[in-house]
Length: 98
Image 1: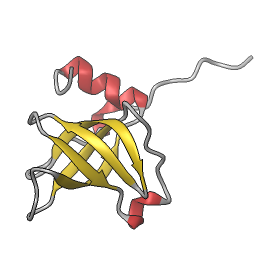
Image 2: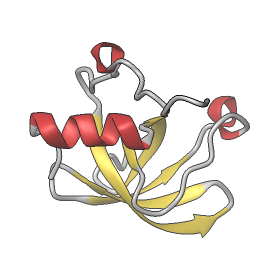
Image 3: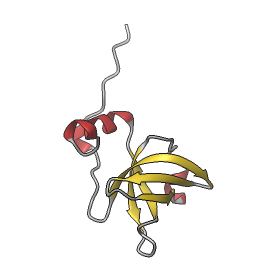
Image 4: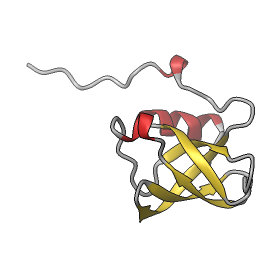
């Protein structure tokens, strides 16, 4: 008999570090660019760097960590992390996102 799947441990969930912001993907623009609503109230066009572009698949309503650019940081940024559904639920339960 197969057991029910167990959610991974949340003790190792990555949290935003200094200079990083949580955001929610609200649309795809093509070419590895996404429209992200950030927790600081700004909307940014963020790109997925080639280093992680091959490894993750980012969709609408995914929770991500972004790093705003030094120049044009209020409008542009890079995505550095995408949370899976278990990690997103953990963030909601701890009050990091709504």
